[in-house]
Image (cartoon, rainbow, N blue to C red):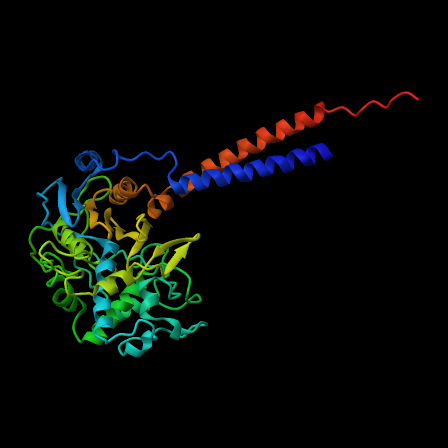
Length: 429
């Protein structure tokens, strides 16, 4: 029995070490190949173009940016031509520009990041809850730490169907994605990270209440026009030109949904405009300031300070995802979007260098996110946290296999060694 216990303990220790080492290696990128060798920009652009041609079943727009300037681009079309001015609906990528709009009101002194949002609401209010609604602040809404449990995800409204009012959507979204609660309410103690599309719909209402304008009018006037983003809007007018056709994951034309939740999911933009958006995070080639006068450099730095984490890793700032350290004391930032039928968009930016990538795509559910993750590892040698999230099941499976093999190997080794030992023979008197 003692031998069995000793072998089990040794095996468990080996299993823990092996599993932990595997997980650490996966997080650190051990053995993960770069798409092409670091620094080979032309080869990276060509590799992405080949992958889009092979794997996209719809439309795609790709721009590679270095020092704020496009250095490679590629477009894929299964129907009407796509170019750098083609408008794509970009799902949750909408939230990044929404955060810019909210923070313009903070800089104007019209919003306090840390005041209860109830101060600014007259058209709708958070329902009573078992938690303190006054802990719901603009800062916490931007960083998904307000304790909201809506779980949204919006599926949208089909053509011809009436679109809910903003207030009705906040009360209970009629277009909630499957599995989402759909009601914007404080269902958990504020402070911890909990993704909430409804929090950004509430920010949409706050922008309208404080500015006195519709959300889209305020964003176009205050953010998009000053940044030169002339192809960007949250509300697409009927008959708008050069709009990407929607495709599903099988490559068939799909429904173009509309949304009440503009701030969370309804942005239409082009690869060219998102390139301008990236460039606005660094000084312009003609001396234009960081933020281009829309936001201050200080506010942009504050946006990428960690405000939320998971499993010990910083993953969220104010309206931006923190994908990985950039090896310069900062983070590679940006946002992704994915929605039905098969919309996937991804933008990444290293604010230290002005390098970035823009991928707008329909017809493949995660292609843009995967390629953007390849860019992060290619540039920094760090693994994009969304890539880790997507690969988590595979990583845990291999860690479990490694731990199991380590346990079995060490258990048998210790068992055999203990069996070979014979008690010493007593000397004759």
